[in-house]
Amino acid sequence: MRVFGILGYPLTHTRSPAMHQAALRARGIDGAYMKFEVREANLVQGVQELRELGVEGYNVTLPYKEAIIPLLDGVDDTARAIGAVNTVVRVGGEYVGTNTDAAGLTMSLVEENVRLSGTTAIVIGAGGAARAATVGLSFGGAFEVKVAARRFTQARSLTRDTQIGLPLDLAYVGEHFQDCKLLVQATSATLHGRADAQAFADSLPLDELPDDCVVVDLVYEPEWTTVRLAAAAMGLKTVGGLGMLLHQGAAAFERWTGESAPLDAMRAAITK
Ligand code: NAP
Image (cartoon, rainbow, N blue to C red; front, side):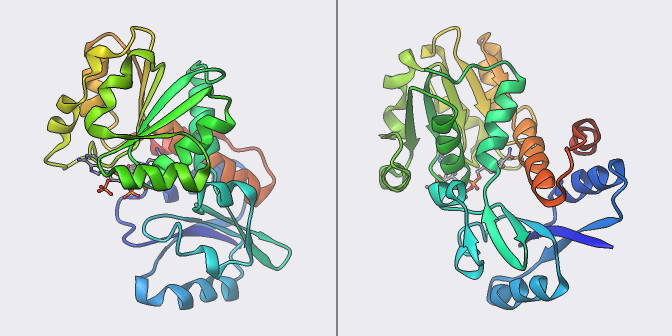
């Protein structure tokens, strides 16, 4: 049996096992996608055990997307540009890190007929998802990407490391809304259970965005976040985070198996 999986801690809420099991089933591959829930103190040993187990490929999630890098045999250009790995591929006997989050986002935008080429975008947040989004939008042809974070220094580190974009202080992001054609919410503020989710949405002057601006929230739990709801109430087109989840998974599946990803089966598995 072929073995794939996901490495992280904790892994209570991940939808990746359901999505990849469905993909393996749909393609008739005798394989398993397992949860490798490894505590930080055991990370080095855990990664070594995945090698010894002969795992063909695995996803990496919080909190190890950066910490995994020195434990691999190498990373590709995309992972290097983002500074994080979300997918590990066994190539020959070597384990190489890549990042399919950026392509996952751009694929989901293509699917929703959102034009990237020549657009002016603002990414809110400066964590791992924001890094992937910034690189994805830039590689996808955006004319300009601005990165707004509540800690300006974090936005500045992102733009310095990636060599992409202009850093902004989130408190003043509204001053840049007039020219914005794509707003990407990439913080965890809108996640299910966050007490500040409504206050966060209320703090964004979404009414200053142009009518043809598309608002994307990378968070998919809930699918309709406070920011999406507020933007939709103003008549703006919105996109949720499930498409990015689907397409980053599809890209990983194709790298591991060499088969095309069964998108319908994967989508059904992650849609609740
Ligand atoms: P992360 O590395 O922990 O970064 C979180 C970011 O959110 C940080 O910049 C943080 O700022 C900021 N933030 C949190 N609460 C905030 C608030 N109230 N106001 C302003 N900024 C706030 O997490 P991540 O990996 O980037 O993930 C972010 C979210 O994206 C996750 O919740 C996840 O649901 C989503 N995501 C979706 C996909 C997908 O496939 N759709 C993929 C990856 C991630 P501080 O550092 O100042 O706290």
